Image (cartoon, rainbow, N blue to C red; front, side, top):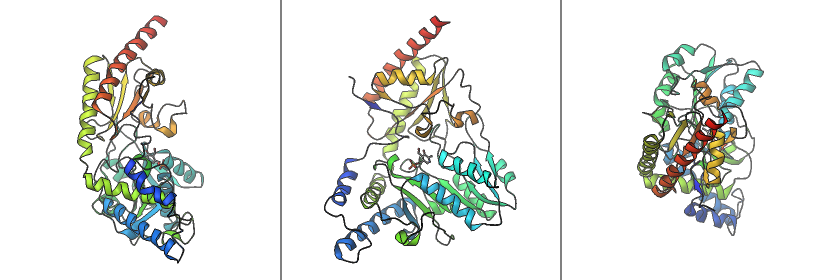
Length: 383
Ligand code: PLP
């Protein structure tokens, strides 16, 4: 059995050892409830305060603007529903056609109950047009919800410019920053976002912790009522995981995004060698403005599902799109929105992480060349 090569870090990441060690005491001896008034609980509360401080610093936010949630999906839905509740007389929302399912499914529900949603189109490289955004705004628009970076093709969207447009028109702006966190510096003030979501498991905590940033002064109605999180998110705090995401925020700040140089080096090397050794390769997305770790890459005539399965037999994990959609045979909504020629060029998504090495990239490229050539030969013989 080959050693596993995990190239699917946009789906989820391995928990960092340092993060796990920071969490462990709170799963063992420090199990107090932070709401208790005795020291055993109060000590835990202090640790939560510290974690909140680190997350706030990572986003250039104030501590009171940070709400701990269970995941980014919860953060996204909470932010959208909050905008809806705050604007009872307005019924129009603008988003893009390439958002994550947690945004798009919420939009679908809102359409069912009478809201109108404009889905901004993207060009063949997955880019949005800010003129289309400006033209879509009307007196009824209550929210603009646009992601910072796309999970499938890695595109980075012009969030600062969008924030300015939203502010100028007095419209709430929500940003799903799940894939950007840890890869691009984020400054909520500079970006002029009202709400922003992030997820722990994409940046090396275990699954089950998210963040919702809510700008100070923005009226806020919880999705889950209760006294925790300053009355903004009920439910006894998930203490170990909060400690974990606080630790990650601290580590990202310490590293100061140095890791991205290596990710970009590995991704660029991988793409270069693939293009040099395999004919008819297509790389999707905005090649000049992408996450440093992501490559959406297709090989003419090779079906991504087949490629994925054969690569898996070599111990290599990649995906055909977003993890949430990978069990659905439907082609990716992101690539469909890019008018991709999926019949001929169906892509696999490679997303690197901090534990990947140059040796793994070399093994991957070697195996990929063999597999693509083999599948192309088989397909030719079948015809
Ligand atoms: N938004 C984006 C862009 C994502 O990629 C994901 C996860 O794949 C989410 C939101 C949802 O995150 P979570 O798994 O924490 O709910």
